[in-house]
Amino acid sequence: MKSKTLGSSLIFTGNCVGAGILALPLSTAGLGFVATSVVITLCWLVSMTASLLIVEVLAAHPEKELNFDSMYALTLGRAGQIIGMLAYVILLYSVAAAYTSGGASILTAILGQAGIHLPSWISAVAFILILGGIVYKGHRAVDMSNRVLLSIKGICFIILAAILMPDVRAVNLFDITHTAPYLWVAIPILFFSFGLQIMVPSMFSYLDKDIKEIRKAIVIGSFLPLVIYLLWLVVILGILPRFGSTSFSNFLQHHSANDIGDLFVMLGSQSTIHLSSTVMGVFTNVAVMTTFLSLTLALHDYMRDLCKVSTSKRGRKISVAITYLPPLLVSLFLPALFQSALEYAAGLQALLLLIIPVAMVWSVRRRQANTNEEIHYRVFGGKGLLSLLAAFGVVLVVLGFMASLNMLPML
Image (cartoon, rainbow, N blue to C red; front, side, top):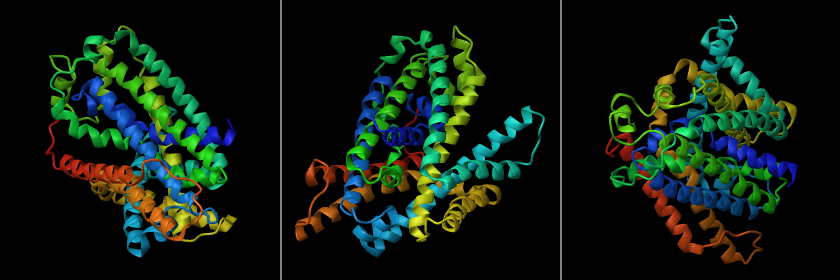
């Protein structure tokens, strides 16, 4: 495998497997492992297919250096371009602001252990300067940095899994009673755990527009997160039962799905081997960095396309500034703003990751049919597949909206 293809695959993986992996078992505990494994596999197939649809759009314009803004303009017209821009900017700036806050907290804690106490705003600026500097250096620098960070994260993950695996019980894993009510709240969570679509234009450019290599990177880079998620669900969902005095149901009656630290305290009390908080902390911290790197790389390339900024040294400084300053300022001065935006993240994600890619491909295929132009790459399935994917996207929007209003049953 080519080095760039491997690097692209790992960037896709690093983008998907962020700090949210720790909350995944609590979000799916009601559904149970068996049903969750089926649903997450289907979500992986949909996400991978949607990513390949984006490749089809890029391949239809081989002479152009495209990112999403240009793709929207070429396929969806001015109205579609504006809708796509608003969805993209609101979602990615909000998520970047959230990760900036998380990264600042991590840096403050690390420096505090060394006896260095800094205000949170200085930690946030330092976090941005360190990781933003890597993105400024370019795709290759992100590739190399991501490999190092992903290696550390992989080692920590293996240690955590090895510690927890002896306490897994088959009876907990294969409990399939009373799972149906919790299906609907789990579907958006499982689909959005694969967010590799936003990385496709950047990696297509990094791989010199090689269709074969980007397809390979997408398949590998999405399959690795699937394997990691399934293994993680095995070791967590297999330790505690779904119902009972010491169970997921009992835990969630007194905690939210984000109280990961308290969950691991409970798991540690059930574990025959001491659960290392240090290993957990390293895993979480590195997960924040890998996701932030890949996410802001995609955002940087999008903003460069949106603002028509050149690739010169001065142009890169401008594009880095417009990538990192807004989320930094929002995280420091208007934290409630990005939190409000994230409440609508499910709808925005469904639009960006599935509905818009389907609409772009539909437009490209219609144009190709009318002009008889050469087809460089086409995803299997035809109109039937596109219709199914669009319908699934609408379902995701509806379920995300219902979940935000607490209209779906949870464990």
